[in-house]
Length: 305
Image 1 (cartoon, rainbow, N blue to C red):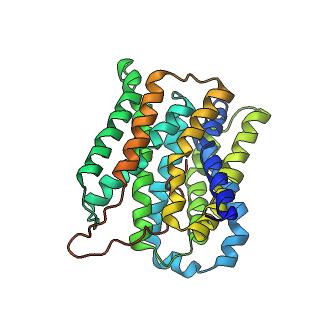
Image 2: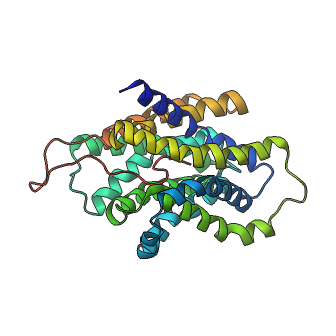
């Protein structure tokens, strides 16, 4: 990998590892709809010039149905669920649960007709990863409050499903243009709820900075860097960031917010990451004579918050 590739890779590992920290800070003072509108509207405004230059808005009209499905699975549903879940969960726990995305991706790909079969190695990875998720969710199960955990797992399912729509239905739609439209649509969807739940007083500088960071850094700038990384090293190598983002989330939560780092969390981290690696390992044998090609360009955040 070139020096530029390493720099882009390091930037993405950091940028998509800290959204959970910023969400945790923001939801202490603003409601979930306000957070979603702030994040999506700011990101859309930053991406507008790039979307205009990228063009092909005619394809948005042509593929409006799969684009809507992508927006629901990648932004509209997940970003509200994350904000609501982090009212109860720590940012580090949320980041670790999201690390299960590759596991759900392997399952969904197979259920929807992937050309790659689930080998013994992959089955082992799925079971190990799911064991890690169960270990991480166990404390919430004991106190009878599984809703936040289920919300984050739904986010992981959405993040695992959305890129499949892009790969199979939207290969010709420019990524920046599509994401700009999806972000704008999400902002419009949540605007009425955001108005109804607008805070009575101006949030603190800390919360406002977190909202700005989510929109500008973790969404708009992250997209630009991510697609540059894909062009530099290819989509398969670019998605290795998936295995580093949870570690950044844990370090950020523990060091900046004083969140606990317990032995079960460390073990769950190892199980989820190890299981994800095994579950998404590529087989050398094609199924039914079909060649296994490189992975397609992912959508907005196959690993983003």
